[in-house]
Image (cartoon, rainbow, N blue to C red):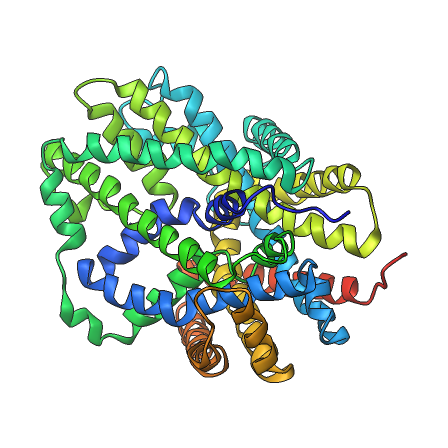
Length: 485
């Protein structure tokens, strides 16, 4: 008997948990501030309805109709397109290999939060004590043992979250999705009551409508929507394959897409109210304390926690629990997509396959536990998200829009939805999404060769594109393997 979700809520929470991750907390607020403040919400919502939700509907429909993971979902229509599903899985695995390392940092900080042992200068603690960072990507400096230990513990947690497939996932997400929302609300209440909070919120939300004339604003809005919804990883295809036949497709896509974007907006309120407080305490302009990525979570927030008038260790622990719960459901969803695909390909028992995936994940993740791990993480994340996912999304749209009977596929989706996928959906999948993603891909590539990412010079190009090529080769090799019955 095929696995199925216990109920619709379990599927919705699992999909929301996969979509909502660390990027909602530390990337969206910064991108919104950088590209027009409150005005950024306009292109962001346009991108959600013209690309994000149509692609979610596409992946939900593909998984639901075929009842397969990504490789065999594509192969059900065109056998020689199984590589696309495996490429999505390979990119997802590449992401989870470093995502779990970020979670290991969060574990370390969670334990340090009780004593605030990151000290008065959290940046020094993060770089010198936690990461023991080297001076370049190629100066590996050996493995950082504490990070490796917590990396292994993270993979053990992932293993037990998915050890019974969607049965265990459907139970875990009640905690890993709802708890971060509760903590986020607590942090918002604490943040907006701090001195300087209004200045930070004004900095975050003041609309700069003139920014909407800049093509980069629209490109980044589409990029943020695309990356934050977990499309292109094979996750949503796998999750939808476990839906019962009478499940709604379009409604679920709207619920999950809107929930994800609303969470990003709330995260921005929590972040910028706190950054406003930091600016107030240090006497600096808000612009001088704005941070994104690891700098926000592991430097700016610990600095803010140090300055809180009371409950420092409590709010510190809550923040890093939120990071861990945000990270764990995104991580195990990526692994579940690989597990679903692998079990269909090789008929390996789930527990054995999950153990094998975890072992490979730890091995691949070793490069991110070295003293140069932050550089590798930064570079790999940039290239997988800005190129790997864009290519996958583009190819998915071409596949559904031009290589199969699109009208028949749309009719199937509509027959399983209260909100019908009309010609508007076909227009977005066949025309709008391919054009947008081609523009994003072209813009990124042009800019990349003019200004190599992060100031790494040719090192970033070699590492980033090299990693993508390796994943593509692995996907092609896997796609040639026939299912062993």
